[in-house]
Image 1 (cartoon, one colour):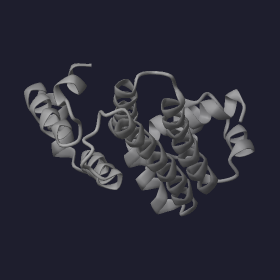
Image 2 (cartoon, one colour):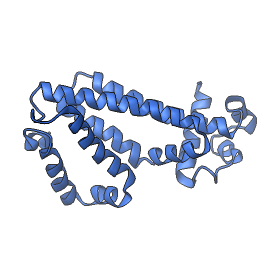
Image 3 (cartoon, helix red, strand yellow):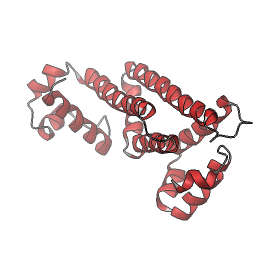
Image 4 (cartoon, one colour):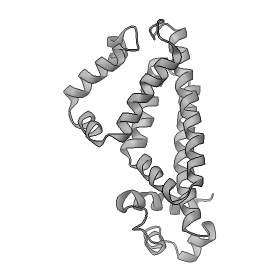
Length: 195
């Protein structure tokens, strides 16, 4: 896509997050992206294709971020933190909830979600394997158990607004909870949290 199409997509994402998918019209998108409806229809033949492209754009962005985190030369602990920051941003930005909404209106968005989930799983398992190999993760734990433990926390964070709000607003709770959480996986939870 070119810059104009990217601007239309990024504007659409902001509007969808702010007002909801069904409330935004093509006129709203045209006005807020400084485009004409003709220009929008040049790139997106209808609202259904726009829904798909928005979902694909979002999932693709987070997929690339996860892949690049796993491939970088940073220390493993930092990679874990960056991985969790990416997942947190996906949720906190409203983009995760937007994608869930888009799936209701265009089932093809779910295929993009499946591709994202495959990358998420591969990336997390790669970090776990590295953690086991480097002696950061308790050797008594099975890699799948560690994956599901971390994934359970991610899913709960994504789907529980009250928990997410508490984690974002109550630093004492967050510190104690993270200490409890990392002690279940890592050999030295204090070291992990001090990075």
